[in-house]
Image (cartoon, rainbow, N blue to C red; front, side):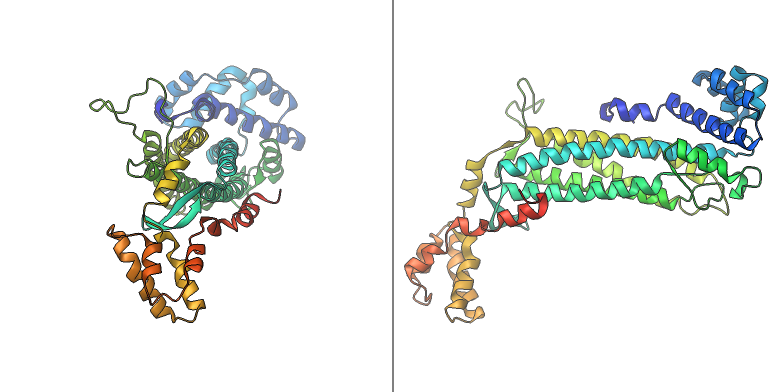
Length: 430
C-alpha cells in the first residue's frame, strides 16, 4: 500500500521484520512444547531463544537462491543459532508457520480496526446527541419526503457501524486459529500438543482440522466483513457528499485555513475527503472476491491463495484502517448548517406534511382514493411555484377539514415525537 493511504501501526504489522518475528515466535514455542515431549533437547530450545535472530536482507538473499521463503528464514536462523538449529521446525511444514503467522497478523489487524470503529462510534454518537432534534428534510429518491432530524441520520450511521463492530469481532474470532499439524495435516510427525501449546502462546484457538493449510472459508468471511465495513463507510461518505452540494449545503467537510479547492477556480470547496473514502471503499470491497476464490484449493494444499493473500492481507487492512480514521476525522469536524436545513424544509411550501393531510381526510370519512386525489391536486401547483400548500387546501371546497384542523397538521414537531424512542433503541436508556 502506498504511504499516502497508510498509518504506521497497521503498516508496521505487515513489514517483513514483523512477519519474521512472528515466525520465530512460532518456531520457539513449538520447540518448547517438543522439549516437554522429549523430542528436542532443552539446550537446543535455549540456544534458539538466546541466539535466534535474522536479517531481512540475508533472508532475501538466500531466497533468491533457494526460491523458498521459509527455508530461507530457517537457513538464516541457523546461521545465528549454530548446530542446535537442527532441532528447529521438527515435524512441521511451511504452512504451519505461514498460516499461523497470517492469522496472527489478521487478528492483530482486527484489534486495530476494532479500535478504529470505537473511535468512529464515539464521533457519531457525539454528533447524534448534538443534533438529536435538529430538523432537516428526509429524502427518498433524492426528493423531499418528510421531516427527520440530523441526529437521526447520525444515529442510523452509529447503529450500522455498531453492527459492523460486532461483525468484525466475530470475524476476528473465526480467523484466530492455529495449525501446527505437519504435512497434509495428519500430525504424523508432530504431536497435537505442540499445536495446542503454540496456539495458547500466540493467542489463537486450535484449528479443528487442517489439511496442511487452514481452511480459507475463514479468511473469506474475514475479508467479506472488511468489505461490508467499507460499504458502510461509502454509504456515510455519499450522504455527506450529497449534503455538501451547493443546492443543498446542509453540511460540509471542514475547510481549513489556507486549504485550496481547485487549481483553476479559487472559490471551490469540494468534498474531497468523502470522495476519497468512496474510492478507498471500492478497493477494500474489491479484495473480498479474491478471498472467496481462495477457498477452493486443490486437494490438501496448493499455493494459489498465497500470492493473493500477500497482497490483500496488508492492502485491505491498511486501507480500511486509514479510511476509518479519515471518516472519524470528517465526522468530528463536520460543519453542520441547521438554518439551511430549515430553509430546505420550507422550500416546498408545506408539501412535506401531505401524508398527515391524507390520513386526516380518511379519518374524516373520505375514501383513501379520494383523499389521495384531493391532496395531490393541491400539491401539484405548489411544485410549480403556484401557491402555498396550506392556503390551497383551505380554499378547496372538497377538503372537508376546517382551517384550524388543517393548520394543526402542519406542526413540524409532530414528526419528532418518537425520536427519543429511536435514540433509546440505538444508544440505550439514559
